[in-house]
Image 1 (cartoon, helix red, strand yellow):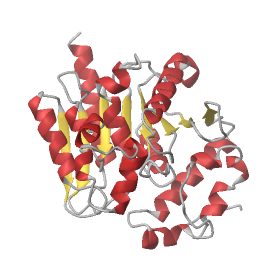
Image 2 (tube, rainbow, N blue to C red; image 1 turned 120 degrees about the vertical axis):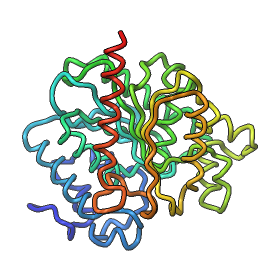
Image 3 (tube, rainbow, N blue to C red; image 1 turned 45 degrees about the vertical axis):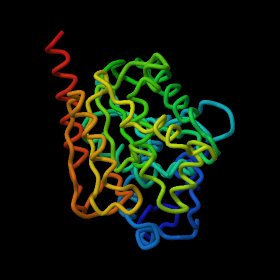
Image 4 (cartoon, rainbow, N blue to C red; image 1 turned 90 degrees about the vertical axis):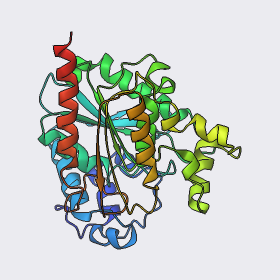
Length: 322
């Protein structure tokens, strides 16, 4: 296939020769018809932007054609864990991105890859994490994968041409939950990794007790907690229950009409951040639903630029206070 367009199918994208050996990173575990064209995705999966998917896939393909090694596998089953590397300007902090998928899949082509493209355009290096999903009682495995990725990047900072400090962790939906937990004592502190200079949390479930409305929610909780879904267990992995005075600064946004994650999740996190005087910027969006990723052409458009500006303020202020 010489061209990647909105009429390309998912199978066309994942089987590009340039993506050989890591195509699985782009839509790990996603139950999506492989013959569906990108332009049809939004009709079946509200929020998915076929144009953004095509543009970011072209961008990744072109970087590979330039000779860049983009895929780094942590071992184990092929494609189970690892990250994609998209370099920006040298000697600057990096962003690690975690796409969502309800801990059943990791939909990086939908969310993380378009965001990584924009982060590169803003001058920063992006890493797209593939973390373990699809199991019952999954945690803390996704945290272990994020810790392994951050550690590897820091240990190879010279190779990747990034700073070892002041990184940001950005997550979408379930990936936002993962990044939110990463900011707590159960995340970066437990794994003895540096605290992020900022978190970017997009339409993320923060309070698991709100995710009890239907069978989809029940399946989501089972993947995180197993069958023992008591309030105590839910609180153990609810981000808002673990915010303290050492929590990282946060940029968060969510649509008020989000059908997958109740809008109250963002509000409860804001309440916790206020309680401990954590710097944050909250962008509530009137309409748009869920799974918007970089959100081009929606009411949330531009959020990534705002988040990066917020992040830069945090590490610049930290440097001034030293």
